[in-house]
Image (tube, rainbow, N blue to C red; front, side):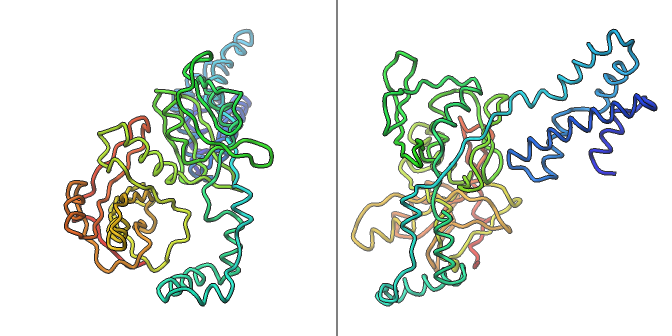
Length: 394
C-alpha cells in the first residue's frame, strides 16, 4: 500500500459506504493538488508526496473531523466541511508564482569553438587541460553546445517577478521606479535610497544577478528565510513559498549561498570566513582531473571550502596578494569539488586560524565547513574535523 492510500485509509477510518467514498475522494483531490504544487517547487514525485502528506498533519485528527462532517445533519455539514477544506488548502494560500530567470544574450552569443591556431598556441599544461574538458563534453562542438545552453553561466532573475513575489509574501519592498540601470531600494516609500543592485535588460525586461538573492532578501526583511532544493530552489519566507528559476536558465542554490555567505561575512563576524573571500561558481568548466574532497554525511548536504591555492599561486607568480576562494558545493557520491588545479599536495585544516598559518608558511591548504542554511538571516558554518576529510582523485 503506497503512502497516499495508507494515509487516506487512516483518515477515513470509521466511515462506511458512500460517506467513506466521498471523504476519500475529497482527500485524494486535496493530496494530488498539493503534490502538484510541491512538484512545481522542484520536488521529485516521491518527495512531493511526502511533503503533501506532512502538510496535512495527522490522519487520525483528520478522521475525527471527517467523522463529524460526514455524520452531521445536512444543515451543519457544509459549515463543518469548510473547516476541513481550510485545513487541506492552508498551504496553497502561501504559494506564489515563480521568479523567472534568464541568461545574458551577449554571453550566449560569445560561445564559439577555438580555432586550430588558438589551440596550438596554448602552453602544454593549458592544452592538456582543454583536451580533458573536451573529452568530458564529447569534443569541441559538444562543449560549445553546452556553452550555448548557458551551462557555464550564472543566471539572472526577473526584477518584476522578484518584487511581485516579495509583495505577495507580504515583504515590503520600496523600489525607486525612476531608475532603469539599477534596482534601487529605499527604506520607506518616501525615504532615501539605501542600497542598489545593477540590472540588465534581457528581451526588454530588467534582470538582476541571481548571486545577490541572499543579500537582497536580507536587505528587505529581518524575517527568517531559507532555500530548499539544489536547483531552482524554493525561497521560504514565513508561510510564503517562492519558486526561483526556470528550466531554461537553472538557478543553483550553492552559487546563491556562496555569494551570500561572502557578502554576509562583511557584517556577520560570527561566520568563520576571511573578511574578503572570492566565491567560485559551480557552473565553470572545471578540469575533470582535479582532486576532490571526500566528506562525511549524505549526498545533497551542502559544504563550504575555503582554500588558499589561488592566493599562493598568485603570490608566487607576481607577488600579488589575492583573496582566498570559497567553494560552496553539495555532496555528490560522497565528494565535493574544491579546486580546478592538479594540486599534488594539499593540507587539510581545522579552522581559519590554521589556514592563515599555513598561508603564512606558503603551504597550500583548505578548511571544510558544513553549512546550516535553516535560517539564512544567520547562516551557520561548522568546521568539519580535518581527520574526517580526505583528498581523493576524481
